Length: 287
Image 1 (cartoon, one colour):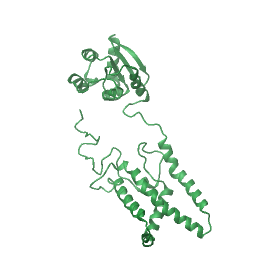
Image 2: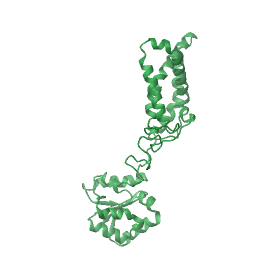
Image 3: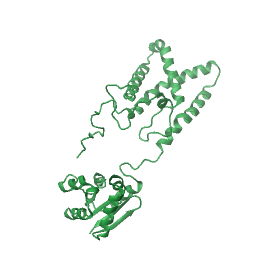
Image 4: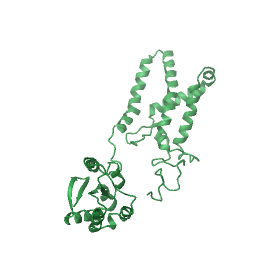
């Protein structure tokens, strides 16, 4: 049931799960990717820290190493733990950048790296507080300026990405999703067939036997290898009640071939339109 070039984790053949290059969005990163949080970003796992937090983090790490002996005398095990945590996650994020022998979906480890960065930044923040007291600058002023700067350079981009509309996933248009949601109005296990999104049919509690020989063979042929008559005969032979032709079919098999199949079935009077979702899908009732 799975193509030879793809493994169960969705990676290309020859790339193991723990490869430095594993992950659909894994790539080598530059300094620019770290210090700037961009509004044009990955919606599932945004990258970039922001210039203000980056500078605060550098200040924090510098202060920790400069005062390490004094800090080590106190019970500051959280500092060592956070530093080790950061080093490990930083290397995992940059597994492709440094061509490391191992990796764990680098683009997804950004969120793990953000935790030790946040913790360590507190050391730099308190250093600024102590500095402000020395020069008689109020702590509140320092805090307000930092918060405003972080809102502008980090939060704004993160908020834009995390409140953006998700794309339609395996579905090619939002209207196509609506067509499949309509399937929920049909009785449980109603037999529904389609080509491009055969697996998705089961997600709406409808029945399609993708592992059966007849279904497997016609799915292998696809729309380009089928005719209106062969598709109708297949549907009747296997007692399918509905047939879906959607945006995913047009994209996968081409406009001309998909449209020829759809019009051929409609003109044969062997099917009737059950629902039509513009720019989404046509659901046909098998007569």
